[in-house]
Image (cartoon, rainbow, N blue to C red; front, side):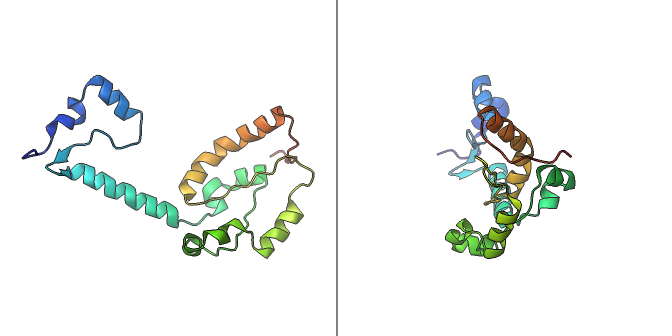
Length: 159
C-alpha cells in the first residue's frame, strides 16, 4: 500500500496511449488514489456526478422548456401522462409507467394519425436532460430513415 497519493496516475504522467484511452470514455479509469481511497478530486467528481444523476432522475418533463415552441409546433408534439403520476410513484411502481392514463389514451386516439407504419413516442424515462439533448437531432434522422425504408409515417405540417 502506498503511504501518500498515487502520483503515477495524474493525467500528465500517463503515457500518451493511456491518455487517449481515458479521453475516449466517460468511464472513470486510471484515477489517482490516496492509500486505499480515491484522491480528494476523484471523490468530489464522483459525488458531483451522483448528484447530477439524482437530479436527472427526479426531473419532470416540460415540453416547452425541453424543446422550445418552434420545435414543438414543427413536430406537432403534445404531452401525455402514464398512470404513474410522478417520478416518485414511477420509481416505486414502474408498471404504472408502462400504461397511459385514460385522458392520454383519448388524446392519442384524437391526435395521432391512423394507418401509419410508425408512430414516434418520446418518453422522458429517467433523464429529462438526456431527452432534451438527444431528441432534436435524432427525430429528423429517424423520420428520414423511416421514409427511406418505405415506412408510412404521419404527415407533418411545414413550420
